[in-house]
Length: 116
Image 1: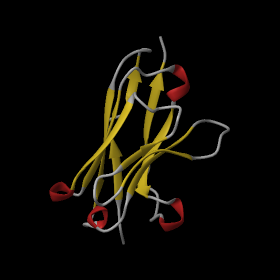
Image 2: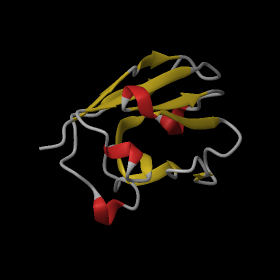
Image 3: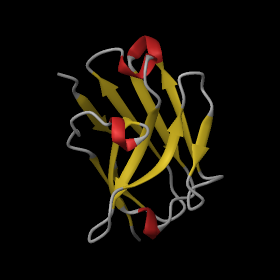
């Protein structure tokens, strides 16, 4: 059973930065493309960033130029560096396989709140 544990969220002012981490219980991210997803209250979960096994990346238009996804296969960990945060980035952030059709059991996520 794959376990995903997200961390690094918190309360930050607009314009601030956070770095999220996602640790997997096995080497799944060496095999599967990985993605960071987010779900805001009353909205559907959406993919905000993805990284392939050969380190190609893609981003939602809403975060392009502000967020950076990366991976460390030796640590079975995927990261999301978030800069220039906006109130509309407020959500619970999750990591999982990309595309979502291949998703494992979802972790608890990490809350990101952008507010002054």
